[in-house]
Image (cartoon, rainbow, N blue to C red; front, top):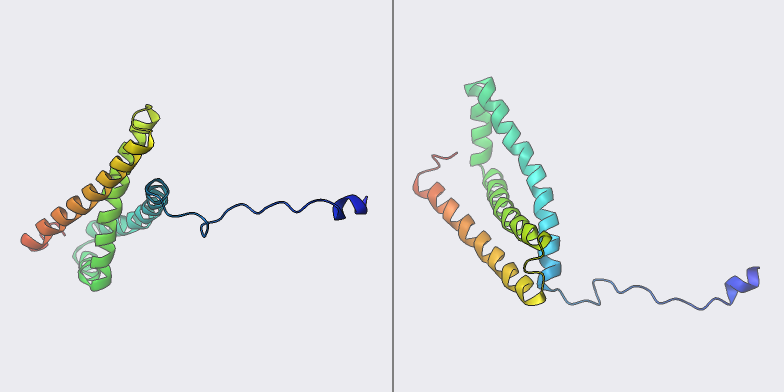
Length: 137
């Protein structure tokens, strides 16, 4: 019995990330998962905002100082990017579920569109935040 194990031919290993070249479809899938995780973390920040607002001015002041800091602004920027990307890619997935745009040409075109939309919407949102002096915060 042990002889049969010794004579088994070696099976090739599955290709890994080092073998494959990054493609639009794989990168958008990975980014969709990453932005979903980032939105979960951002939800904690959003919850903090709601709780601080309900507790009173002192708690809200602590929250306001945090989101006005460099790390807080970076988290808000990341939350904005994650929100727009996940929204756009989620809509694309709804179309895919309906059988629309599942060919490779459409997948690449819609992938490029969601990246462009994410950039445009994020820049537009932060432009409004800067122009209105953080009135949204």
